[in-house]
Length: 212
Image 1 (spheres, rainbow, N blue to C red):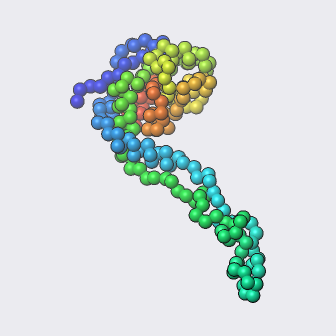
Image 2: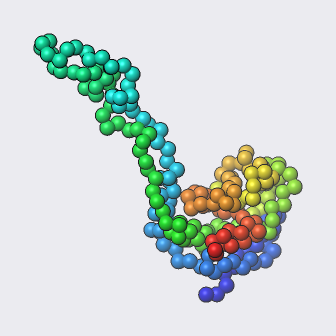
């Protein structure tokens, strides 16, 4: 397989050369089915079980038998918190005990990540910069830099090294701009944002991690 290269920009939006990337990482064949499996599993694993209805054992009261078993002419009941009664427990209602998590193979997850990254590259939506030349955490500084890069008008995900990065702090007030820690990159977020902006050092780190 021939070498795969991506344009390398500086923080002023100028193309300063080409960055050679790992063909084993970016040269994978894209399989939408694999990507879909990982997306479904990731969303299921992040789903919270908020809705909860109380069963008869959880509803307050109803400890005493409402009337004696025989001789009243009425139906037999053991508790006023039975699901048959108004104010009683709920039968088959949603509970927090539900588990939506799905298991996903590590190799499948890694393969899907490579596929999405490869798609970003082939569709010119992977923007690699030499470095983030952010001497301060001003929003305007980041906004001006992004205007010079080919990402105007679309959502952008910027990869950062830590939460204290100036890029991370400056992006908080910008619409359609989000930052993500390099170790938290995932398939869902990559698909959610149109462009991915990453500096040269972190792109190398990502490739080395998946080369292991």
